[in-house]
Image 1 (tube, rainbow, N blue to C red):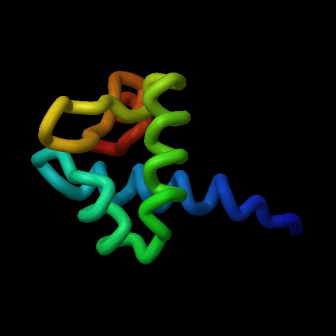
Image 2 (spheres, rainbow, N blue to C red):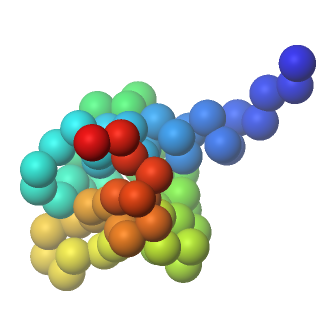
Length: 73
């Protein structure tokens, strides 16, 4: 079975955001996931465009509308 590393990293970021009640900064996400900050930033920017993640000015990132719908309650 093939493995797409960027998809795995994006899923890791989404799981981390789903596990918290408040927005997380790129630095916090990088620390919690072990993914480099530059990669976290690029992933979050892309996932923002897709509605999976939302940027909250001055606070960081949280799940977006689509991300919340995909997350089990």
